[in-house]
Image (cartoon, rainbow, N blue to C red; front, top):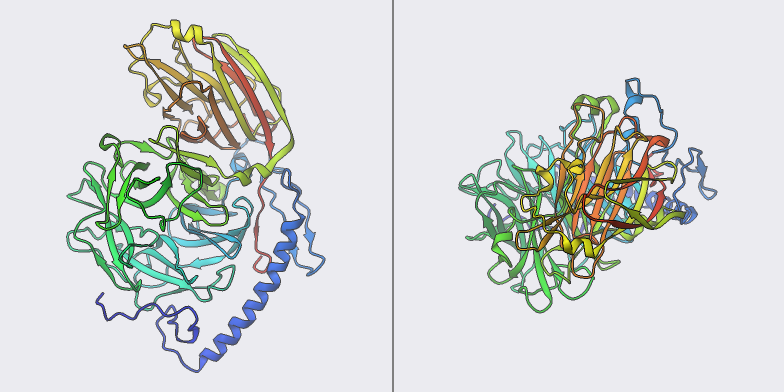
Length: 636
C-alpha cells in the first residue's frame, strides 16, 4: 500500500470508523450508536453477574457438580463445567470409549478443532484469549477466531466468535495474529489472512468499542490487506505478525516470519507510524541457515537480575540488566525454538549470545508436544505469560468420534534463569494452584534402591499437581567410572534402559499392573573426563495399549547446579502431562492415550531403574479440581 492509505481512525471517533465491509458512514450511524448503547448496557449488567459468580467460587478445589446455579440478582442460569465428572467408564467403542481423554483444567472449547493462541492481552481487568478454531469440525479447516475471557487465566468464559473468514483476503482462514495496546489505550490486532488462492496477506482489525471490557465486536479495516508478500518472498512464506513496539525514533516495529533461498529461516522487520502503511527494512532482524520457514516469531526482553517480566518498552542492548529472547516456530520440524541475545533498537538487529545455540539449532520452549506459542506482557502482575497449543497424536477418526481436538497448555510465566544466564525458566502461573485440594499427600525420604518400584497410595490419579525432589547418594555418584557419552532421551530405549546412574523418577497415568505407564525421569550420563550431564525425559512408549497413537520418548539435557537436588513438577490431567525440571529449566509436554490407566484405575509410582546408585525421594501431591469453562451468561 502507498502512503496515501487512510490512517487508523481515532478510537473516540466511532461514527467515522470504517465498518468491516468498507461501507461509508450514513444515516444508519444513529441506529448503530443506539444499538451500541443497548449492547453496552447488556454487557454491564452481565458483568455484574460474572463478578457475583467469581466471588462465589471456592478458593480450594473448583466446583465439580453438575447442578445449575442461579444468580439471585438476575435469574440468569450459569451452568458449571462438568469436565472430568461422571464420564463413562466402559471401553467398548463409540463416543464413550474416548470421552475420558478430555482434560479437566486445561483450556479447550466444548467441541471442535483448536490450535494457535492468538492476540492474548489484559484489558480492563480481564484476560483475553483468541485462538484458531474450526466451529464446524474436529479437524483443521474454516479457521476462525474463538474468544474467551478470564479473571485468573484458569477459569474462562466463552464469548461469541471474534472474527470469521468472510472477505477475499481471509476467506481461507483468519490465521495467526497479535494484539498491541497503544499508549492511549487503543487496541489493534494484526493477523494473517489466507486469501482465496491461499496467499498470505496481513490484515488489521480493531474493537468497535475499546472501552468495552469484553471486546465483543471486532471490525476489519476497510483497507485490508495492509501488506502483501514482498518481492522475493513466496506467497505462502509470509505470516504471523508480532506485537508492535515503539523504537527510539518514534516509529513502531513489527516482525514477520519468513524464509529465503528455501532453507534460511528469518524474521522480517517493518516500521510504521499509522498502522496501515508499513515500510520493510532492507535487512532482516535475524536469520539462521538450515532452519526453514519461521512461524509465530516473538521478540521480548527479560531481566538479568530479577523475576519480574518486562514489556518491550524496556529498551536495552543486552547489557544493563536486559537480554532479549527471539523465538520462532519451525514449520518443518513443528518445534518452538528460542535463543537469548541482544537487540539493537537503532539498527533493528538481534544477535545471539552463543551462535552455537542460535534460534532453531539450540534451545526449545518444550521438548514434547507443544507448538505455535505466543507470549504477552501482563501489567497486572508484571509478568510475561506464555501459551502454546498441544496437538493430538491419535488418528483423525478418533478426533471426529469424540468431537474435539487439541488443547492449550496451562499458561506459564517466563523469566531468564538468573543463575545460568543461558536459558529461560518456565513455570505454571500461580493461579493454577487455586485448583489444588485443601489436603495433600506427602511422602518424605522414600528410599529407592537400584531396581526399586514403589506404588504411592493416593487414590485416583488422573488430575494431579506433583512436586518431587530426588537426592542421589553422593558417594556412589562420585565413585562411578562408567561413561555414557552417547545417551540421548529421544534415541534411548526409554525408562526401561538401565544405566549406572539412571533412570529414576515418577511413573504417572499407570494401571496397577503397569501394562500402561508414562514415566518421567532423570538420567545422569558420565563423560569420559569424569564430568556428567543430566537429562530429563518423558517416555510414552508404553503409555497406551492402542497401536495407532504417538509413543515418543521426549527430553533434553537440563542444568543441575552444584548443591541442587534433582527436582520436577508434573501437572497430570487425564491425557496430558506437563513436566518441569529444575524449577522450569527444561519442560516436556506429553500427550498420552491410556485405555486402562483412567479414572480410579490410574496410579502413581516412584522408581529407580539405575544399577549403581541409591536415590531418596520426597514428594507433595495435590488432587486438582476442574476449571470452569462456561459460556458467558449473556450468550449461552
